[in-house]
Length: 199
Image 1 (tube, rainbow, N blue to C red):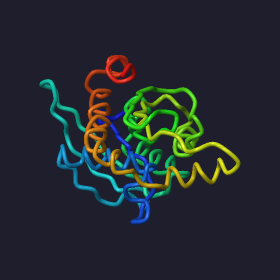
Image 2: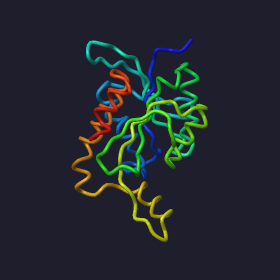
Image 3: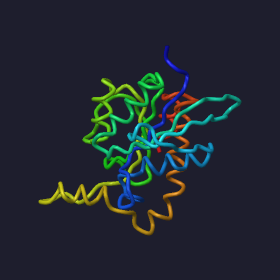
């Protein structure tokens, strides 16, 4: 029997050296949600930091798990699939928050299914769940310079930090990302897309 819990997974890389980097947008949004809903993280099988809590919005209460995979980005699926299987959470109750280079910094797009857009964390989750049909909150981080060293530039970009201007905007951006994850759960995907995707 499928559980009525939701799972929100914020993607990132564990460890000090990755803290505050573009690739860790998902972790940062997860931290905002943890603070909002008093989530305490504990280790889940060495694969993720996992906590559970309830959200109360619009007179409704929803139980949810919040996860920060410890598997490194490229193996995010192992963590997400393990939690989903263990707690019997179906893909339509999973929300994944991740950085997206195809969107300008500060933009958020919400979707379910579709291509992984070259994001290794999403590719891994698609593989491990056997479906892309889960919700995604795509947090724009902008794009690295193209050119002869495009691959290295991209790696350095996603593993780089934010400039002073972006750092100022970051708290509000992360709060918007947290709102988007909550809205998917409470208002459904279509309504959330209307609200965020057109901005």
